[in-house]
Length: 114
Image (cartoon, rainbow, N blue to C red; front, side, top):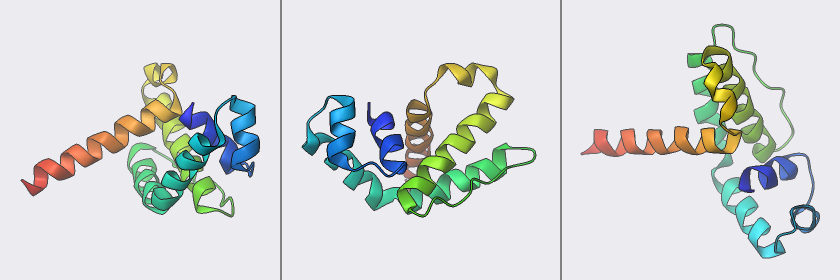
């Protein structure tokens, strides 16, 4: 649900309409969007680097006009590139893919700092 909410927000829908569309509490969706917005530039950068590393001929997403939209677009682009390389990635949602990719990065950074 979080991934869907962020994708909808990236299209420009406000948290109230987004929550109504997902049949969720407004505060829940607002919280998701606020937390993601705080890290969206970092997320965009991380997935842009991943796209360049992963794809043989990376196609960069067009700017959306918002950091949230750019981050969501970067995640989608890397997910597509991963699915081209490894077809089983089509069975993993973009949100799950992003969560695993970020978790692996955080774990790797934590281990490197140890």
